[in-house]
Amino acid sequence: MEFTRRRFVATAGLAALAGCASGANGGSEGSSTAAAGSNADGSGSGTDGAVPTAEETLTLSMTPDEIESLAISGGPPKDGIPSIDDPSFVDPDDAGFLDPGDPVFGVTLNGDTKAYPQKILAQHEVVNDRLGDLAVAVTYCPLTGTVQGFERGETTFGVSGRLINNNLVMYDRATEAWWPQIPATSIPGPWNSSPGTRSLREFRLVWTTWEQWRSFHPDTQVLSTDTGLAKNYGRDPYGSYNPLGGYYASENTLFEPLSDDSRFERKRVFMCARSAEGAVAFDKSSLLTERVMSGELNGTPTVAVADRRLDTGYIYLNPDERAVTTDGDTVLVGDTAYEPDALPLERLHTFDAMWFAWHGYYPDTNVYA
Image 1 (spheres, rainbow, N blue to C red):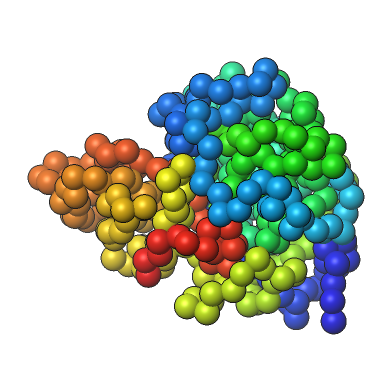
Image 2: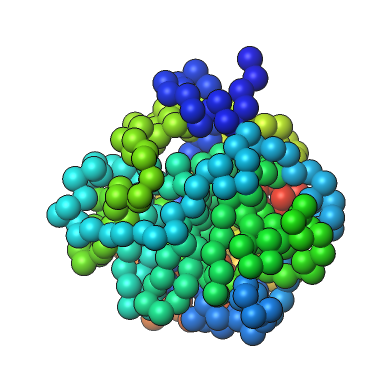
């Protein structure tokens, strides 16, 4: 039986339906990281006056036109899944709608510490917010388990109503260009046929649990259910992460992926990074167990390290192949101890993605499990 996304979003009790089998985890304690060519504070050099973009364009496995040709309707029309454009926040003690094991997307950036509950973003996918004086868009795709943060400049982002590889396609309201979430790179769309090829400036969000985030950041603010939109945020239309069920517990996808790779289950979660040069992915569960894993990105050595405080990890370039080991929750580079998100190496923007989603966009990725 086929389900459109419109029906899927409108339907409850989806335990028999297909979906995303993992909770992606996403980032470096929420601190800012940059797209290729960006500065460490998340700022890049390029901007068209409306949408800030990075100096270098991230790697693509196809041309933007080819990627655009793969776009399909997800069911709801443009803005049929409404972004949150005027978010409000509450103190941790007032976030009674969250259970300890509920997933949240956490960020600490520009003087602000915030948590965005997955159960709210599942019904909106985009939150146009500010972190200090930085205008940002927090984006989440339930179908691919990916959470991404972008600078938005003077505009806002919305949900286009289209999907590529089951993944959210955003649009910006200044140029109306399309921005597939995982590649974070502009492609043509029906409202802007020639946006040029640019990649967004990115910052890291951490996929973790409310209990972990609150313990690590007791001063956090929490996105409120008072969104100005009539929604039942106690009921994720796709299923549940706490406990795992519905769409998130199945190996099926709502739409056909761009590619299939039988080496791993479709919904297995990998910690992933891409640059202008290539892409790399490390199995998340293996990383959390082994603590340190080595790999390569387009021939350059990389090292992935776990941060079990928030059950996340980070990927660094390690061209000199410096010795990286662990001592308890501390990471050692040589004989010097560092926090997992602060190694003296170039840190790549890292986020969690389901295997089918990552492989569909980056079929030539280096992968380590």
